[in-house]
Length: 86
View 1 (cartoon, rainbow, N blue to C red):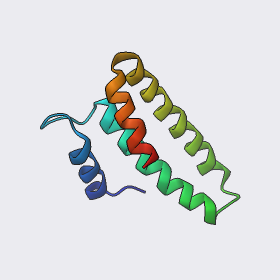
View 2 (view 1 turned 180 degrees about the vertical axis):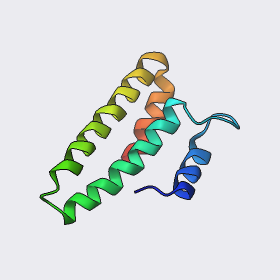
View 3 (view 1 turned 135 degrees about the horizontal axis):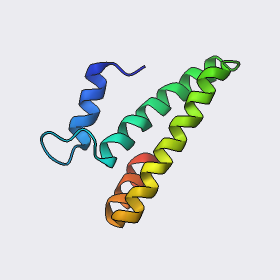
View 4 (view 1 turned 135 degrees about the vertical axis):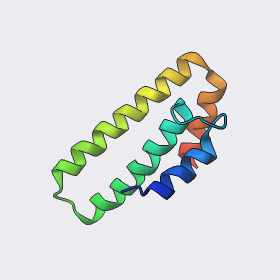
């Protein structure tokens, strides 16, 4: 689970301007961190199907944000894909 401090740090690293909390870059970064943490949880708790469903929904949501970013600005999309893979 993301604590408020962790989430604020992620937002500060990825925001486009001072008060940015909803840009695709920020949302993708927050979702990526949550996905990583939940994937680690599921490695330990293999039978936690409720959390697995939440993970699948988050991955789909991140994919939707990436598709939107690809459609609107290809350069920003490429940067986000590189961040995710790193």
